[in-house]
Length: 285
Image (cartoon, rainbow, N blue to C red):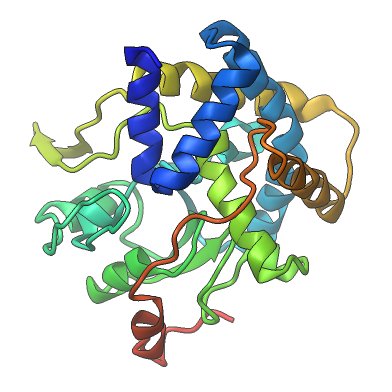
């Protein structure tokens, strides 16, 4: 494995854990012969396959969203390739800037960034807004509530019974929903590294962004083009779109690279403690 593939593996390990990242990268190496251009084509085709489900998710958000719709980057970025979401806000929020430790990435920050509330306010989130993210538990949601923000969270997949999830609502099982949610990250590699700093310049607060590793940028852009280019394809139902991706998950069990994970990433060790102490008044169901 040459240096650029090693860097890609390192990036994925922070998102998925060592076992899944290794399985994903090794199967991609085998299928592509280590050729980045060929591998990028696989991600473009993967974007085409994800597009119907992303389109259905966007319609569900428009139906349930209230006020300003804020697309939370990086994880929910595939929605940004859809023309229908052009007017939505794009915000970079993560556990690190919100003061929540992250087990897989090793981020250990325990303090909210001091410019966080100003960043949100300057991006149209001082009034009621809709918070759109991939999911699963709502640790960032809880921190924003502590800031006194008034908003409505909508997830792609939710493990929190108090927060609506798109896959949950269409009847996808918990284990399959988790596989699809984890696969959303590796199927759309992050073009930007996880931001840790907010900076102020000329009175404006912005996120200090850096590019991810070379292959993540190449593959991530290819997958996003696939979503965009599929917008004129024949429509299928959300459940049909989900099932087509779950078929790829089952194929991945045989060691074939499909771009969809064969199983889920390691579960958060503090899941039970977090959900059992969730404030009862924070319920959007």
